[in-house]
Image 1 (cartoon, rainbow, N blue to C red):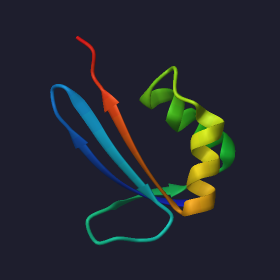
Image 2: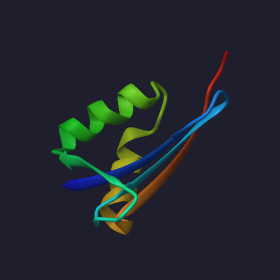
Image 3: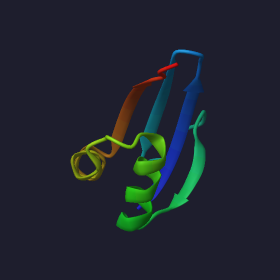
Image 4: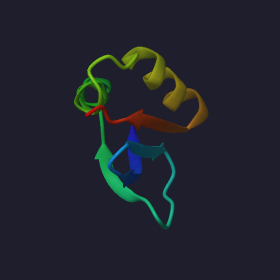
Length: 71
């Protein structure tokens, strides 16, 4: 699946927007297999529901993730 990404990092959170269509403000992440997507989500957050997020991305064609940063 071809994925484009936009990412905002702050001290308290990360906002990650994934899309299956090219957008002007997004960077091309790559043509990722399901296993590569699983590894990508594991790196973002260890307790994320990986299968649910893969299905949402496949179904809707985009996915926004808001990840809080613990200190």
